Image 1 (spheres, rainbow over the protein chains, first blue to last red):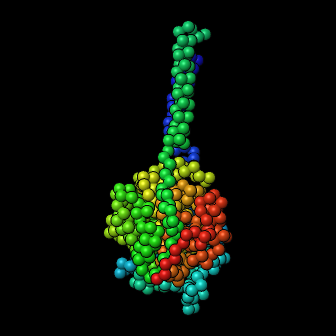
Image 2: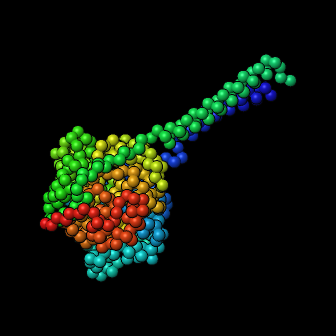
Image 3: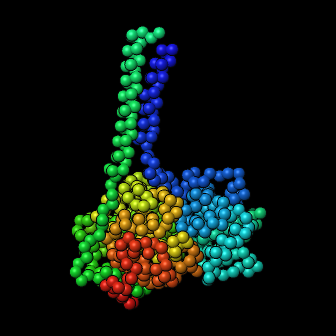
Length: 189
Length: 318
């Protein structure tokens, strides 16, 4: 009996010390997110973790669609993380039942950079809704493709549950946008 | 049956346990006090207004460098705001992986000219920094600001984890925040936003530009966006604000990308009243400033006036 009492009494201070170290000397409840977490924005490993539903999304970037190759793994953003990529535009997507974004920088064979953002909006009607809401007054429609719009340095389209935004940074990458868009459309179910 | 010796052992061990409890609780409460009371605050960076000085300048012209130069001159020169030996941080919008033509970031020529003016006024240190939304290295390079500001003599501070300091914000949304260290250490702060439409707040102008000094919290801040915008403006209190409207992003902000959404304005506005500057910026976007929540909130807390035409205003043509 006495050994049990000794053991309990010895364990109590050890547990208390452990608790104090863990709670009392760590981040207080009101503290913001750690800076380290912020600094990892853009690194896929610190973003939303892929789940089985992301397989079709990630498969879009395999190989060289339209002669354009991803420069790294796509960064995935879920509802909680979307603000970290598009800031105040996020509610427009979240209100339309956004599921996940795959964002990746790509390059043409000539080395011209562009960005590709594919939003999984869960249902085709949600993708159609965000497509209409972001339609620029001065964007041009694309022949034989009413679900696509183009503008200088930009190409956007929707297909099934996906809404895609392609952005170029020079004339070379701008010329690659329609080909990439067509290749991505072919891959979308 | 417990003997006398065992009773002494149990008593001694109990005393140790109680002592540990007391020590633990003391340490715990002490650390909480340290967390809430010993954090630095951000100083008030404003300078007194000289008698008769101009409050706000709007400069129009095709050359953004010249617009900045003329606007500062009309305000009384950079010497009104920066004294010899002071350390100055310039805070543009470098949030996005976008070219200058896409008008998501502040124009690099505007930033470079401000760096030159601040250095000419005798500043001992000039930082240029922003907590980019997209990958910082890409944003700083593609915006053209890293090269333009660096060539003009500024020290570029990327938003790495080590670049942040925890400060006491005392705001309504945030009590504490991780803030880029130049904002905490500088003697003077110059806010250099770009004029953009913004999906949630209507516009992103001077006051909203302070989101870009923070690490983390974007989701939290956007839940009460008008209050948090003004909280941050109250927190920083810049010395001077120079608003870039060389190009304005009229739709699909804050990210943009499509040049069809960009309108050339060839305008730079400068002054010390962020609410007034935001009201003017709203008009460039075709918005009624009295219908923008953060402008109204800024007026309500006494940060400034949206009636910018009532101020001592100078408008310079091209």
